[in-house]
Image (tube, rainbow, N blue to C red; front, side, top):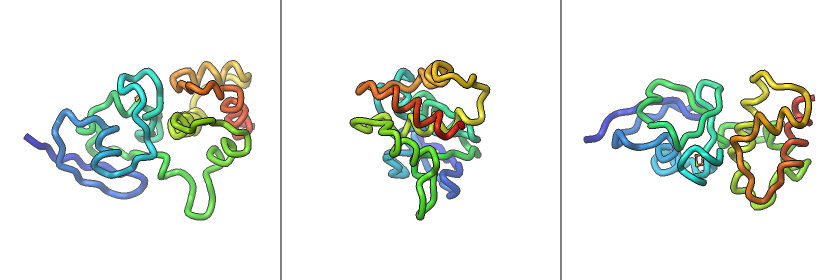
Amino acid sequence: SMMPVAFTVNGTACELNLDPRTTLLEALRDHLFLTGTKKGCDHGQCGACTVHVEGRRINSCLSLAAVHDGDTITTIEGLGTPDALHPMQQAFVDHDGYQCGYCTSGQIMSGVALMKEPCGAADADVKEAMSGNICRCGAYTNIVAAIQHVRK
Ligand code: FES
C-alpha cells in the first residue's frame, strides 16, 4: 500500500503518496520530475545521485523517500537563481569541470556541501573528500580546480 510522504524540495512543500520502497532518487526524478539528479550505479558507489538533506550531502539512491518525511532537500535545480548560476556551478563552467556531464550535478552538490565540512587546504584533501563522486571521463583535475576556486 502507498504511504504519504511530505518534504520540502528546493523551497517548495511537496506531498507524495509513495510505495514505501521508493528511494529518494526515484521520488525526485520520477514523481517530482527533477531530473537533474542522475542515477548512475543505484548502489551508492558513484555519487551521481548526490543531493542535500538538511544541508548535508547524501546518495539519494541509498535512502528511502519515506525516511525523509519532514526534511528539507536541495537538488541541483535548487542552486543558483533565475539570474545567476551558483558560484560552484559557475566555477565548474569556468574550469571545464566536466566532459560528458553525467556526473556533474552530483559533483556540484557534493562540492557545495564540502564547503561546510572539515577539509584540508590541499588539492589532495579535496580529491579525497570528493572520492565518493566518480567521473568516468576522468575530469578530476578540473573538478578539483573548480572546487578550490570557490574555497579560496
Ligand atoms: Fe547513487 Fe550511484 S546512483 S551512488
